Length: 166
Image (cartoon, rainbow, N blue to C red; front, side):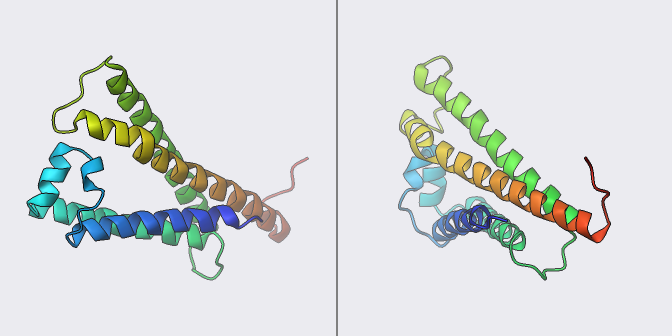
């Protein structure tokens, strides 16, 4: 089993979590790339925004732990649950990125209006940075899920949990 996709997905998740925790702790670098309204909420230290970035940071840490569980035995998580969670994470991240690419691309092209709380500068940042970042995470989780599924399928066949297919 190739392990680099899972380790890369974990690194992606932990790096993303660090960004969230930085913003939750009061950091402002890069927050202007997210949109006018988010920048305002961060500048005003609005409690709902702060709670949201702490929560999303925690979810990103859980994603990183999920990725590590794919390559680090002994976590006590059933193989099937890990496989489903990894595939679900990869699909959701990829679909989210693709939908954002389409939406932001239409905004950039002028086919749909850009909401004022987002702003045209943030649309450019989303297309150049955030949407590809989400897509990268989706691809890494899909690759990790594929590797894990192939390896765990072999283990199930060897242990007699799943019959051999020809």
